[in-house]
Length: 320
Image (cartoon, rainbow, N blue to C red; front, top):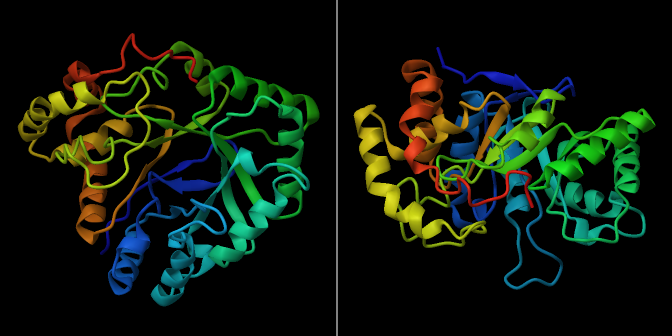
């Protein structure tokens, strides 16, 4: 019998998501197609139901981006029904304008071959000319039209998320359910801080991302691909901590990668942990990491990795 990982509620949306989610950034376009089909089919068989397949580029970009387009072919080749997985799309605020988010979303859905997204995540808030009420009402319209089921935000400040929640409550429409945040043994200040604790109490949940710091915490201290931003400029310290972190993983009888994933699941607000994989072995490893929390215990894991909290007292817990 195939062992399946558990699911957790995606806020109050009524959606149950797998505790692991598979991303697509710099993924499927680096893989042999048959290998990608095998990997995604294996993931679904073992309970991974949430797939992040955002459009990471724009028309005319060279080289063109097509990892999301490949995903549509992968699920067809694997024989996976649309009802058997959750689709998460990114919506970029840089593209918000006439028509709201709808033109951008319809383009993304066209590329991925789906009529709707179960979840959309708004990208980083870098514009100061947006009315948050307009965003909330626009997303409510997309939900009413059946184009999305629920929504969340990526790396927004606690104050701005709280404003979104207040607006949604006042307007009587669904608010954000998910905050996608960097969360790892090294980057904990924001999700573990008091400002976000108040949001967790209001029912917001977290999608942990960048849990391996682009592979650095897994032991690849010189990644061969692009790694995400470095808030607090702590990456040099993270690299220096890798040998000691690996030693703790060895004490637990696991790998650094599995311990990094397991840690992300110890936060009470974590609904799902987002990871990238370009090899089936990586998916298998992360699936095994889920059981570590039960085997070792969340409190023990958090205690033993405390010395690797690199952004403590460096990054503002209120967020960007």
